Image (cartoon, rainbow, N blue to C red; front, side, top):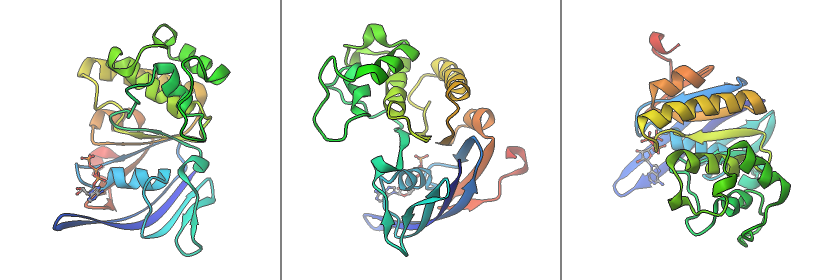
Length: 227
Ligand SMILES: Nc1ncnc2c1ncn2[C@@H]1O[C@H](COP(=O)(O)OP(=O)(O)OP(=O)(O)O)[C@@H](O)[C@H]1O
């Protein structure tokens, strides 16, 4: 599994603009992109996922182009088969846990039925010990259960890799540590590669087999202490 990224994107907000110009390659099982707030980490991850269109450049997953401005390749997000975990989990508040997970399987925009989803959903409910809260809505869950629901939704479609946007930042410190352990074990168990963005040194230490330092929209050489 590999990611080859070489993209440019200019975003404008009000009278400020930001230039992203990142290039990196990784074939590690666990890659962490880190750097200070505003470095361009989220923009990079969104571009890889197909949620943000670069102005120019190329993105290849496992050697297959998913974006290439020169040849006008732009594979839709869903067809890239990358599971995306949003920083705030982005669960649907009116859907139950089961429906939220089943949503990962949907092609259209019709909400899944309360009991729908089938075997794959059952498997993830069980794997993440969410069966007893399957009919609850996100606001009735603990922080850890919310994160597991979002992870299950990202995984239910059998993605070829997981993209994680600051996966622990919404959790309090104690839970954060526990969920780090859970994710660590899960990744070992299911063996799918992940790309995580974070500004938390603990995430970097635990998951950074390959480390990419971003600052001001470009990849920098890491500090010796981060290597
Ligand atoms: N949709 C947008 N429109 C305009 N500017 C944007 C947009 N999205 C991001 N930016 C700007 O681009 C820069 C990089 O943002 P990005 O979210 O990628 O940073 P980040 O490294 O993920 O930061 P954080 O760790 O705080 O999430 C920031 O200056 C941000 O204000």
